[in-house]
View 1 (cartoon, rainbow, N blue to C red):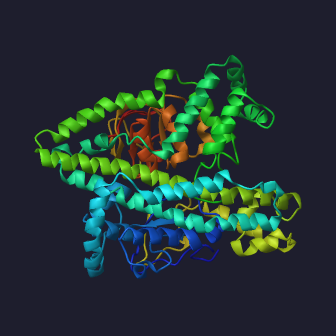
View 2 (cartoon, rainbow, N blue to C red; view 1 turned 135 degrees about the vertical axis):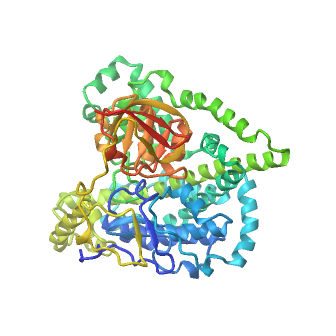
View 3 (cartoon, rainbow, N blue to C red; view 1 turned 45 degrees about the horizontal axis):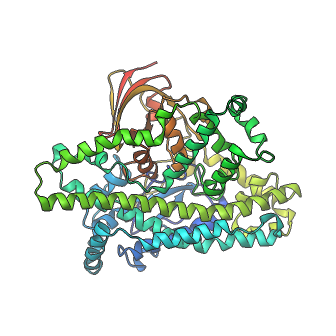
Length: 571
């Protein structure tokens, strides 16, 4: 690790200088593994992301030629390029401020410095027709194609244990061109998910602006929500079985011991669940993280929490309870509109819901493909650890892509270098990295960054009202529990209000156990918030420092439509 940069850091863009961890921390909370960066992200995801912007008539390929024009790695962490997202919005007829509010909720962000190059008349002319398509289409063929390819790769996986070491490397690398392709639907879905809310928001008078989050509500086809419904069904099987209840009462590790040998009933259901959704997991954008398939106890722990809820807490019941509120908000918003305006408003809302679903479908396709590479590399890592080539199996993800061929041939010369690199990589996790980086200014060196815990947010007091981003409708009062990672979900009690630093979609089944959610990062357009609306869970995102301002046991009132948290009592 150099004084200023980690070995996988990218060169920041000069044309698009502002970077943010917002809408990045919720999908990649930790520093990326070296293999995740050098095999997947830098050579494939970043160019695929850029090509999605080009296909969506937002930029020319030449404009995005810089390595980190859409996103990049700083201090080993993923940062989204906020400048290029702002320009994307401007070219779609919005403003930088509207884009910030939908995707980033970014008070304290460096201001957008306007440039004549923000405007591109040729692209804007083509973009007008594109916008008309976005607001009216009910079909996105690119997303369908990407999903079909991802499913084919997953369901036709070869027998990994029968492959040689070199064939495992080839299998992992063979996934990468498809990973690059799948970012088409992820980015087209993502960038266009902002247009409907922006158009609808501009049609509401200021006194009705707060209704927008409630109206967006339930899209009805959000793929990232599907695992929660499946986990709920598993939890009902456990809850209705005295034998399974007793087994789960003995602990998740005891349940996991039966997985290789048990068959029928719940075990067959769980195997089918892993077959369909096992590609999901925490911080799932990185090759080097665990998925539910590679570590089933992650999913079993969620079933363990859900089984404690009665049937009235089902996702379907929660969503039905919010449906009337969504209808009421729509009626209030459209009151007084003429027929043409109301039709346009409802069309914009329909577009927002559809593209939110396509965004999540695109993300799922990307993650399915990434997990295919992950599973091949896990198999390779287990073999190399057994042969003493690696200190432990997960160390395979500390290697660089350029080192895999030699490692596959059982070259022992990398072991010490990998040990040292792993320690340096772990040290990155202790950094308190900035939320924003402006590459037009000197970027602080790693040695100048504070460590986690060195900085603090003022403790909230009873009577305080904390303001975040309106993310998912609903009002709820209750006690909070601060959960800093999915490793600590065993401490969470059903009915508590979850307070978390960030939440990728693998956390969203825990949303169902919570009565409400408060998150340090995220906004109306963040992945987890889309799923929260789908599940009918009140949620406030983008409440910076919430995990420090609030303590477990505090009582609060969460208003997800207004984005406020009122502190009622403190411990």
